[in-house]
Image (tube, rainbow, N blue to C red):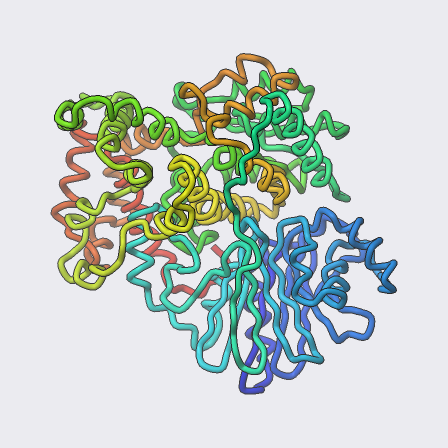
Length: 633
């Protein structure tokens, strides 16, 4: 697991070594163990290494036998042993035992088609000295990041945006679309970023720069189906086998491994699979919260006892929100997913014991685990009620106060969203559930000037595009595919990558083995959500491995008690981070509406914790992170 950076001058100018070294040094947290550089006329490649496989021989940049192919690579190739033997039979000579070298020789053997042979998480850059070609690629699901800035005659790329901000001439103009999307999703879906001229290479994409021309293309996209009619027992048996195979592949390392264990279905599945795959001493890690209703440590401990792990647990409280400016530096962009805080602290604690941890990301998207899928299934029943009754219920829930009780406010907010979404057509109900601010609210939130600039931007277009491209499948399957294609890489995987790498910890996600993903996408929707139960087929498949009460648990998630923390400390946060003043300076907002939200939340009339957190995060990012080319937080 590493950090990569590079510069290519299309006009033939030599690369400034000092600039590339500064770009690479900004990624020190991603790879504190080693560094390296390659320069050849107008190209420069930089690398920071976190040593996981072939500790002594995996130095990068790495080359082929005659030095005509150079690579910097971030990630892990899990099938590298199989590929190594295959390439050796074709005459390739290996000098190391690292997984990096199979990409180098794979490129020699298959060219850019090498991406189809790789099972892993990866972002890499290959410089082909003979063709004078730069080849960039990102893994299928977007586990590892890669961003680039193409301005005039210079292309700069890196694992994180902060490296690009150090490049002379990098335009740091804020993207109107990025701001608009952030207040729709809580994050900014690719290929856009918060900066107008910096782009994300998308999951399953590659980019070739040759003869002065930059071209991106898609080599893989997740899809749903084709569905097969099989007995539930057969689905379960194959699911266990595939999960076991993916976990066994990802146990490969020359350093100690652990697992994030929350006590939920997904992390418990990965932990149990590690034991069944023959992993020796398994260290499991979890964190809980100071509000009992949100604390899951007891469930994690139960799974740990059942599987037989050496377990580590700790608690966090509202004071941890003081980490926000530092965490936003690692993220580069505003992201209002409050779980960045526990994810960072969990990674920090885990890194004290191990260098690699497995995690359960992807299970909710693959097996319909989110509550909004339940809501979509519920809407099919609610639609039998006359529309006027549903409208009355929505209006009624909006009028109910929560009397200063964060928990009651959360439940009323959920009820309002469920009833409100029942008024929308299929798939649109999903869109209503996941939006942080509705189109109507954004009209109130933004200033008149900014509204004019964004008037042509469609609401939640990235999600809607997935539905359009898959119009023939069930709306719940559309929503699941949209989450897999947009939310997972844009939020979940970004959060896990940045927060774990901030602690120099590698996190692997075996549920996102692309062959397991393809299998899961072939399972019919009615086996994933059945009689309002989410992850039905996954729960049945795990019955031989996990305790029944763990399998019966409803989804809780890794969410901190944000409404409690904000209810208690909102004014302190707002004053400390100069929220109102900063929002006013940005010019994007209608401050009277912001004050209305804040006042209603403080007085207990409505629960606006998510919206206020989004505004607070944006204000902190704007004041402390925006456009600043710093190499350390």
